[in-house]
Picture 1: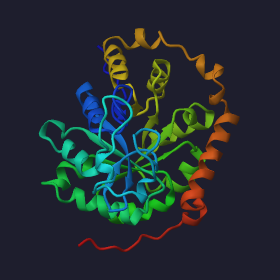
Picture 2 (picture 1 turned 180 degrees about the horizontal axis):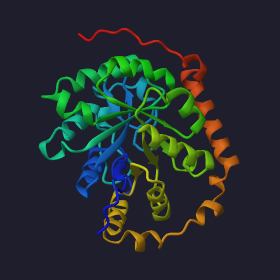
Picture 3 (picture 1 turned 120 degrees about the vertical axis):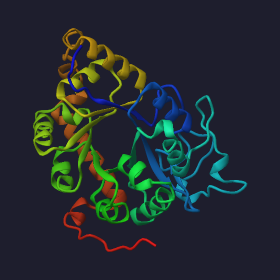
Picture 4 (picture 1 turned 60 degrees about the vertical axis):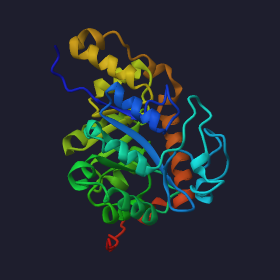
Length: 312
């Protein structure tokens, strides 16, 4: 049996290939499968409820419409009544409900990657999250060390350091250059797109992270060939919609690593257009432009001094 260290399995929006994404059913399924962590996204309602939801608007995945920040959670027309389109129909979970799930004795080994969407006001969001986290029994030892804040934009760094200083921080992105320039000194973990890590620049970045003791997560890895490539890279975490698929492959690797790894070739790296450097560069530029259109130019936050805040 192989003694090699293999990547952890974190359920991307839960076990979202089977259950509606970002729902308690999806989170619970990923945990049942054996995932070491779950990943989800946060937005805040008009009445200050933190919701686990990917898009800023409801329309893609639910039976309702409108921007989350303009809708209330409570009330006759509140989002508490919204249900997913995908079966089995599910409610949108709140951050508080998700924390309650993770604080069950049988789930206290599960890590929680919170993808902080740039539409949020960081001070408001992190203050609300702190209020929920700090009400849990023994939260400083049983909950806080398991929460990983995923930050796309440097605007969020100072607020994360001060409002949630007990949470580990990661940078989520698809640009190696931006990761190095704006996040290297302030995060422990880099959660990078699979495509970004396929390039020569990505290979150097993976090597530099290992030398510096930085963890590397890769998303969203659903194809078996891509999972095996991530194993070759030596990443720490694979984020996947297909938790059972990666856990099954990992179990087989633990039995006979050499046999399993040779079954999956690398030709896709040269036959998939989106993994070529010009395509990767175009995607990273488009993503930066989008992030900056929402939260401001990255350069405005290159040397942001810590913000002095006091918790009540």
